[in-house]
Length: 234
Image (cartoon, rainbow, N blue to C red):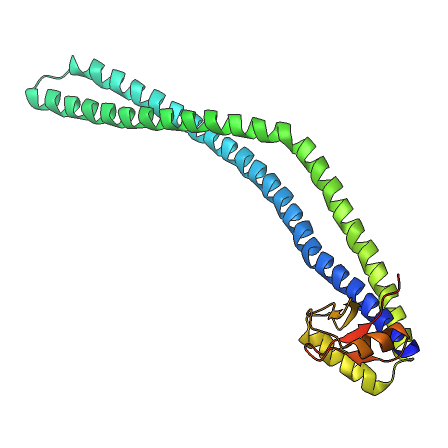
């Protein structure tokens, strides 16, 4: 009985280690995802604010350029009354038309910049309103996940120490057999008998083997899947 109990105990420890490994497998990714989400939001806000500064400069530049062109147009219109030849008149008129086209382009650009600024201001305002609550939530969730990781890591260390102590009481040949079954059967090397069937694969267990397991004799393995068998009296 002692031999199979040692293997059952080892199996229970390994199953717990499997659960921790599975849990820890997701947690680091979740923590990283939260950090990336927070970083992305902060960068988005910074980029938005920087772009708003650029838009203000471009808008001011466009306003200044438009005002400068208007002055030039007015100046050229005044000169139209002073010219003495058609050639001079046409040359001035051509320049005026050129200035007007440039002003139309600038006014179109000004409108586009103003629309972009308005849209960006709304987005930035919305992001700023949500940043505090979102950051607080992210911090709480991140700390919770990191706490779980720390707790799981501590439990893992304890289980690994316990596992090492269990190994000293198991014969090397038995341990080697257990390791082979463990790897071949996806981490389930020891199973209870269920009535007259293997708790792992459902294969038939002869009555004599069932009786011996019930009496604490063994260990025995399932002829179908090779797993170690034990009788669970609880």
